[in-house]
Length: 473
Image (cartoon, rainbow, N blue to C red; front, top):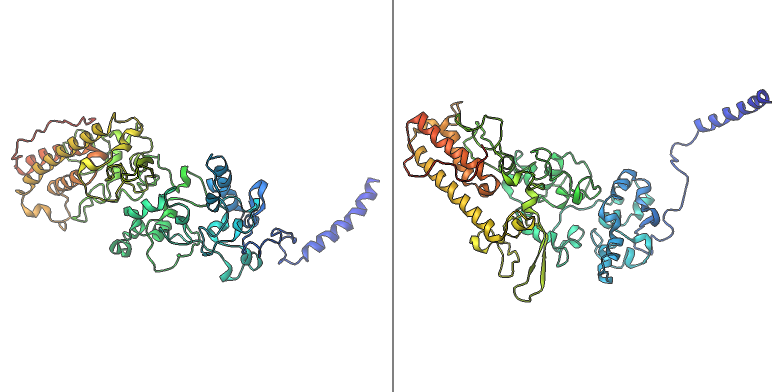
């Protein structure tokens, strides 16, 4: 029977292989109803194919994006609202698929047209727009719904439509920050663009995703999508890189904030974005008489285990202030990226850059228990600042007496004078007194001593060369 059965199966198998070999390769999978007849009624939005499993209609083809998106907060936006204890109808448009967040300007689509489970959560179409035409004809260029990364308050079709305003003022604060501004000179400079222009920043990260502005000549600021990945939650907050890693290449902030923390012998220019190397303890020009060997580090508290979030530990913190006029609570998200922002009488950030230190909030310094009070943190900063200014003034007075030839950037020699000048500039760089006062003090003292040794020019002031800031050396 077994032998007879094999003789019967063989021609059947050959027939099956023959049919498979002649199949029409244009048929990828059998027809199935993913749309459910909702396209026209909901303005072309399709939503979920299966709400119970969070499978979007888009995800039936875009499998990788679907899988990664399911791990993001957007995939649970509806449940988050319902469990918040403050769910209201006016909140629903930002927790479902609607016109908000994409290039469709008119309301009354998606969840607003059909209040069904299939439109719950912030799905693909919430940013990319209605997918009906794309599903019907995927290859047509005009039917590919690219999302925009050009965020800004009042701009339709961007993150700002939901992540702004009283409840979520992320974009409001970002827009007033330096990340929200495009400076023409660095944006046009090939050497600077990757940190000063949004599209170039994404390209430098290896991001090849398509978006509405890609390939255009329009300058884009360092927008939400530069730091946050809308499709993936590989790091907290859907960030593209970690904020906890003490590495200039692997830390999100330090990838840009480390461009000239050490001297560049080919230029006379001083420090540029030196925050990363300062925080990690290896910035500056290390004179031969430094208390540590080159390659070692002088640690700072803000760059240690006491501050695991490193840059973000001080620069991105949310807290609640009080409106000075109405007395109502004001939410701040930390997306002004100012560690000690200028504030009004109620503690609300004003967006100003230059104000008296007494008008600055040091609330982020007390949030993690690092400083007992805002006054303590403020005084510590002022003490360190004054100490570094005094030492830098002493060093600059010495350098003024050094022959000008010692500062020639074209002689192929990096001199003590040039290194000492870099350290003096680094010491007075905004924020150095917080990022690493211990290292800055050590660099200045060693530079003053080395200039005296190499050029015979001693410090002309009575500034103490004792370590007073507690440097770990």
